[in-house]
Length: 193
Image (cartoon, rainbow, N blue to C red; front, side, top):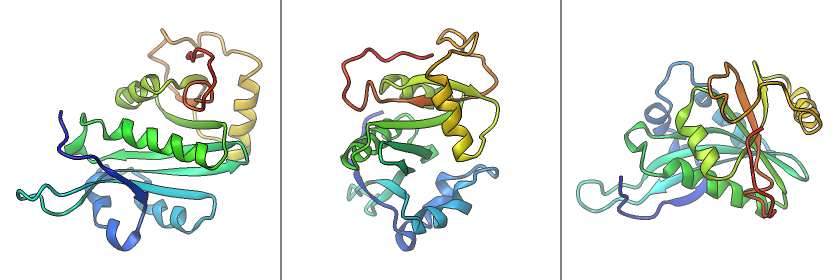
């Protein structure tokens, strides 16, 4: 799908952006409407939106088309989470653009590693990860605590879990990924592990 105009990347503004949550986070299990206030208040979290400008032909108002959160985990690492695209805008490239902007923001914060996760059944997000050069690092069946996740990611750098390959697309788990090679500037060829 083609887009009329470039989107603006900016910080989440509760007073302006709250109305878009129900439209974008339309699934009843979605945790983001409960967490966005906490993300906004935290000095470690950086919720961001992509806003498409109105076109003057009936769509005169600016529209939040995607949102997500960047969590600054430590001096070198960010965690990209809660990536959402307005269902009416899926397929327009806003998910890729949001992730690209979040990766640039990670670099601007001085980080060399950005991580994220998604369900292995989320084909759209896996496509974005692949397109942006993410590597699969770890398959987990649940989200442990932050320190437990970091320990598992660190352990995954030393050993591969048997059967964890790019061809094994039907894993019943979530994938934590690390993009330091592709998105953060190394010349190594990224790969899924």
